[in-house]
Image (cartoon, rainbow, N blue to C red):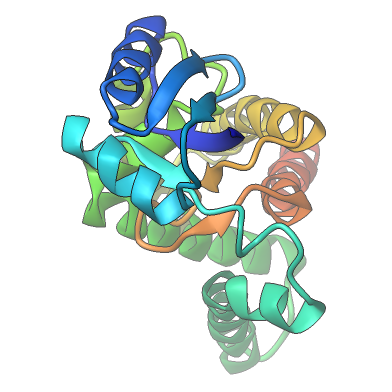
Length: 239
């Protein structure tokens, strides 16, 4: 039997080699080929193995590796997809509600001030979820980010960058430098996200760290693009 599974947690070719050797040690796997580029494993098995069974086997090697369950997410109805993204949608809703309430209490709506508060809430909130499991976030982020793939420390630095940006927006500190940094950081992040979506890689989106199992999709692209557009607009207003 032939089975292909999507993996996450690999950061280098050595990880792929270790996983390949580990798969070959499984009593019902006769041959395996693990691809770091595809973040996938192609297996020859002597009996049917579920993704849950393979996930348990992978985690025996190292808890940072895991199998992405495509058996249940590959053809989800619209209702299930909405439920899947519910945490992300709720976060955006609450940030929007709070920032609009601030504008209301100030008596008038000022676009740049609202954007600044919205981006402050976005970066602080999203960094919070990454700090809940920094190691888990780093393992997921190295699966698609173009910098973290080649230099894993960036995956550990990134949440601190997000937190710093959030505080800078909140305090209105060095607005040009803050917006320029956000524009560059989010643009670089967007490249890896777009590549993953175009390549149809079934990997976990690390925007909310390792707390929620969100798949990489156009929703992630929209999230990054929104921050790029906002920071770009404010840069133009400052020059």
